[in-house]
Length: 345
Length: 245
Image 1 (spheres, helix red, strand yellow):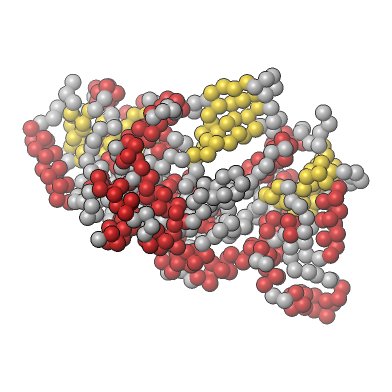
Image 2 (image 1 turned 45 degrees about the vertical axis):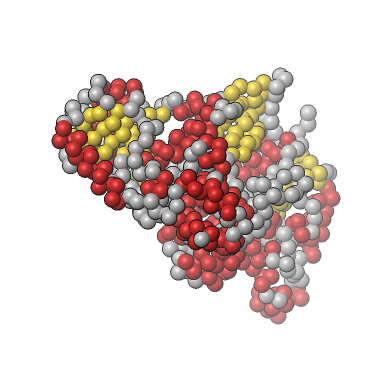
């Protein structure tokens, strides 16, 4: 089996139908107002493949915002059963930024202590990527992070060309899909040439959006810890938590026990939490060690560009631009970083 | 084990929150299996002369008569639950607090002002200890049930101190500001699962403001979206005027 294949564009509809018949198929759908979300689809007509990053990233399928972890029964001692809510899902049309986001989450949840709920669910996901040939809008900063190009983390990856999709086959699951769909053709030298010229064109379009290399970011944050920029950002911030909820790499969660009415049985659940919330860093005694909005925003930026570089040797920003796009107060990631860079120089 | 004696009361309100309880459907039957309902004017005629394990009080305090009634209910109850915007934050009744009380009375009762002695609107916690609060106009049934469970189990319930936007994002609604409409989601406490916005309406702030709302920031947001800042003040005081003290 070749590691690459071609899918004629005219047969994309058949491929989507094949995937939908196989297991639950999720892809980007339009909500109006140029906004999109990942939702279940059964046909190509329902999909919007030319889309801006969705409101919520695909993390909602890997780490649901309300997830049962175990069920308990106290009627006879302390009975507890782990629960993993899992189903086979194919995610279709993922941009490279979102694939990078999933790779970040994989690192976090594979780290000690391994998160078996996440890891079990991850094995039930089939990921099919779709290449961006141009910027989605001015909020994106993917070239800075080199996430505008495919770097693994998918089963199949599709690049739209003149008559075909160029498809990179990255896993055994991907191979099975290509074989069983029976819609794919062999890669031709002409197609290879076309892919190369497309990637060359991308080099001109996607240029580092900021006057800094990501490797130098931790130093920038060390130097600007007490910057006035954070005060200005804090004055704007409404602490609504949009930036963290829509972030593909934010994974903070809270835990709660939800009893049934009889009170002897119930579930332990985890729910997304956000470092932007007023009470996130509040501890016993009422002390809040990040009581200011400015401190919380600074913390968020550090959690993207500083701390993960030290721990995982990876930036936890994917350049998708969701945080800037969803911020009603207009706190813009690129503007904020530029302001920090300006102030230091 | 005997079931806890539960009663429902109303002060100044529309009794719409009681209707939410009466309309719970199958879940109401489950709740009735766990409690002994001793007073609930909207659905039964019996009264109870003894102690209440749990008293639910809807409505706000707008005159001396209501204040006396509330004090008596508090005295006779182990647990007091304020439910609905009127009881928890003063709600719509609080609008009258924006003007001198005599002016308001005159506008409503004219020459017969002496027949209806009135006071500024107060939420229950302004007068008595409140053990649980369920904000909302009307209350959101899943939250109501959550609080009933907490009260039965003797566990605390804390109304979220983060914005409605959080749950609205979980529901992936297109932001009202992107539709060019003023919405109080960014400054209003969550817990309603963005009920109104899910159905195409805006957030009116019926659950009360978050503990530390960024009012200057909220006005800046309106400027950014070219919306009238006075409108957000009007909307904020629709439910929250009684909380300004």
